[in-house]
Every structure is written in C-alpha cells, then in structure tokens.
Length: 257
Image 1 (tube, rainbow, N blue to C red):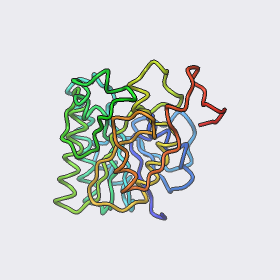
Image 2: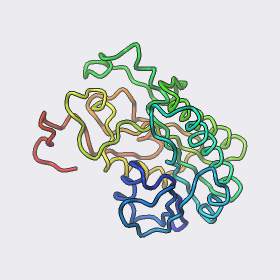
Image 3: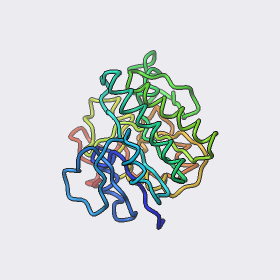
C-alpha cells in the first residue's frame, strides 16, 4: 500500500505493538496527545481527536485510519468517556468521510460484550467449556468504557450504511507483551500477543470488507471469543497460544514471542 495510514492513539499499548511489529511496512502517520516515549520515523501530529482541524490535516490523502485513541480506563467517568471515546470517534468518522478515507479500523474492546461472561464465570474460562461468541451477538457492555466502544461500533455501522465507508471493528482481548500469569484464567483465554496484534492489524489494513466485527485474540487453547471471522475475512493466522506456556511463563520447548 502506497497511500498513508493514519494511526490515532499511536503512543498507546496497541499503537506501540503495531508500530514495533509492522512500522516499517507502511507510510504511517501518527496522532496522539503526547509524543511516543520512543523515537519515531513517521510524521507525528500532536492533538486531540475532537479537533477537526488537526484531523483534517492528519487524514489528508490517507487511505486508511486505524483508530485507537480514547480514554482506556475501564472506570473512566462519563464526562471523559463521552468526550474522548464517543465524540472523538464520531469526529474521526465524520472527517474520514469528508476527506475521502476509504477504510476505518476501529479498536473496540472485550468490554463491549463483558456481561456475556457474568452468568458463566468462572466456568467460562476453563478448557472444557465450549461457549463462544463470534461478533454476531448484540453488545452487552460491562462498564461505561464498554458502552463507549459499543457506541463506536454503532457509529461505524451508520457511516458505512450512509456513506459507504469500509469499517472493521476489532474487539481486542487482553493485549500484553509478556505472557499473562497462569492463574489469571480470564486473561489466558482472551490473550493477544504483541506479535499477533501487529499481524491482525496488518491484515486489517490489507483486506477488503464492508462492515465487520472480529475478535482480537491469539489462538489460545481455551477461548470464549471465536476468531473464525477474523480468519475468514482478514486471513488472520495467529502464531501464539496461551496454552503453550509453562507455569513459569516460559514457552514450552524454548520458543520465543
């Protein structure tokens, strides 16, 4: 892809995983309120996602927007959720349509469907439990942050139907650079490695789709989020699996992430 790809929230956890994994493969533009802690080799825009002037400048000529920015706190107050996650996301979609962006990839969250776990935990996290959700279900947010992510998905649906914008929503699981503790069964079941995260967003940038919802997790032995849609639509082929780690947290057989 020769056209620029705008990465909002570029200094955050997901943005860092993407930049470290596939930063050399794309003509990224980076947008955040603060510069990343590490040095960057891409054009950097400092500003707020509710600032239309900054967004217009950053998006001009871009083909894809990977929208990660927002307040990531699961206990964020409504005022912050409304401004940073809902108003900001609506502004992203609006400006994307105005300047001719073809595709928006929206970082949704497992918290948009968190209450599917409520009546099933802790059995849900065990290997013998077969329950899965696949992205076709309605949202069931588990906090106001999840409400904002579900709202972002609905905004994407509107901008796709009304303006023909291609939209992919990625309900991201438990993204960690290191393998989560073995006694954290929920984190094990929804683990997303940095390597698989970068690969998933690489495929999201490259693939063709209209409107989709997929889950962003690795190919864990136990998973209550299905990755079948990500495989089918994006050709996503994760390489990591939380089940391949010993109690000490080291990969079986001495492999590396």
